Image (cartoon, rainbow, N blue to C red; front, side, top):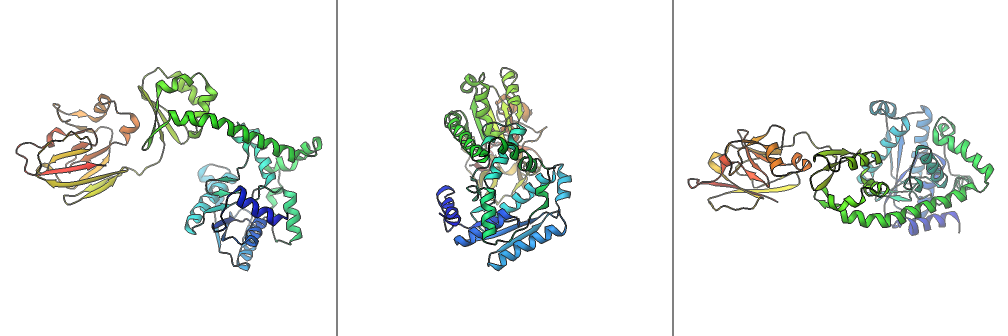
Length: 442
């Protein structure tokens, strides 16, 4: 089977890419990505080409862009290019040039994928990149997950050249006279990956000439071991980690038996990015005062009385507010739909998702916002005012839920309704009430 047929088989049988799927190709102008563009074109797929100009090599960067553009236009392939001020971005973020370029390109690729309605983003990493990635991960410290190397498919990104090695690529490109440009930085050993490719791997090949083939087999063994481990871990996680809208609840009594098994505990929380040191801290505070929060780069874990609450640490808009007027029929806030209307129904209802307020005491527009430190109200059925923070403690409201608690606010600033909990006593309906403003939260 020739290389083109192997490519088609890999797309269909391994990556499961439909022939009608539109694919956005990330083409730099180097040997690997130009081969990928050639193979997709020859295979007749619906493709578009994206090229990043990071403006790091002066005229050479511009010549790379010109080469890719000429290839795309010469083959009637839609072409998109974007120039980045990579150095400035890296300085602002406090990261390396390589990390900055990676972040910039993948963010743009995903935006462009949606814009051109492509199903996949194809990048031209091959078997040698696969090996280098595992060796690089080993130098930094890794577990089974890092020893898997580069996965053929992850979310919307595919790597259709992972069945090829660099020697096969070089031979095919030469035989078919596929144009390409070498990036001089690929031959500099000041970068860790280049040093592994140019210095370290040749030393391994002196010991074992068939090193690359053997190491690829090892990677497959690592992948199989990881898959086996997950087949045991996933059912336990699914049983313990219960999703409730935007938060995951874990009963302390059910996860307690796993506290003394740190490797297992680490695997359970691995998708959420918690380190072993953080989980050790969790274990040491297990019987301590509730309310302690543990953080990973993207999640927060709250240790409460009987439950653990796991929530993504997402950045939300500053002080989101929705206004409600007397003639408003419905609004959306905090993932909930609020429906409202004016009636003369004085019947009381114990439904916590329903609020009935004396219309004549309201000052429009009302607003919906989240709880803020210092908020007070007069809880229905109680005398005097109470800080909402104290009310939440009394009601055993978890910290995460408290921070995302919708409040209905009167035009004079009074809290009218702590949604799903209590209305303000001063605005309840009484026998003399003529009109009732009713709100339902769904």
